[in-house]
Length: 260
Length: 231
Image (cartoon, each protein chain N blue to C red):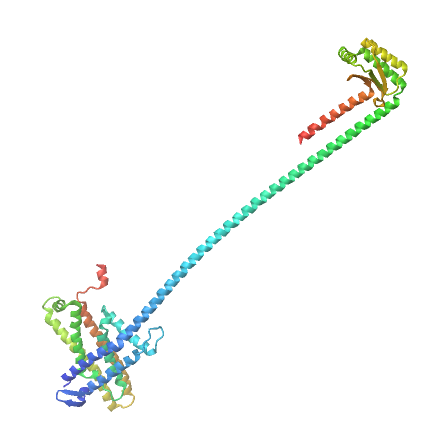
């Protein structure tokens, strides 16, 4: 008999026991170990993923920051460049202005100097001219010239216009002091008498006359009484000439100054 | 002529007896249990592990994979039964290299016991999965006329399981025995090697068939998740 029922039962039991043993000693621990390992690996992978994500995030943040920094740097650089440009312009402008001011000042100074020089030269020329004229006239002025002057003076007295005559007459009448006749040289008696007569005739009164010598006049005669004056002398001519020249100079330089 | 290790009886007391089949089965059980215990005593959950642990992990995961490939949804649930079937049968045949050893699977009693276990396990898992009525109803598919045929098929395949394994294992031992008397050198070694191969194939066939039967019992009228999704 190939089949033994007791053995079948025993083997069935044996097999069931073996199933339990295997389950208990083999499958459970092995599967547990596998599961644990898988869990661990997946955890590690998750961790790695998280770390990767974090790294990526950090990289992104860093990149963003970098870009921002670049932008800021560019902006700052541009700003600095603009400011430097502006400053440069300002400084250039300032320098130009300063240069302009300096140049205009210098020009003005130059002009002033020229003017001064002109004035000095003019004055000097004028003085020289008059000095020469005075000297020449002084040397020419002799008694005969004085005499001639006396004649001219008397003629002028007589030819005096109405208004001057009246003013002079009034002045002579109101004063008690003698009228003063000044001349560059001592007048001879004849001349004196002639002048006296002329005065008397002109003003139809006895006029006290006092004669005086004044070399300043260069050549000529002058009558002064109570603030009124009638004269004919070269000095007078020269004085009026001088005045005229000065006025001319003034007129010439005044507009020049105004122009600048 | 001795066809089965059942015939080697060490001790007998009435109905109870201690034959070579039972003794060698105990020996195998001891070796398997102790080996598993020793190896799994200090399992590492780290990436680094011992080569023995690696071997066991490979075996267990391969079994799981096979069960899944047959079509059982939750392979861990069936691992205890089907895995032990495979391990026991393969260990029984592998140990034939040991002189004096008689494979317990070479006894019809053992294979019948295993086939009986499968015979019981199929409805057990089937009912667990679908419920009693639904499972019993499956015998009357497509019509009630099929009921006897279904029952016959159930019994015959169990018988076939037992006889197939017994025949193969016994014949291996028989061939070696015969060859030893004819050509005592070399040929028995080759035949032993062939016997190892046959044993492994038989272990695979036995457990795969058991898986298929269980899968058939648990999967009747249970559409696949993919088809569900397609619907």
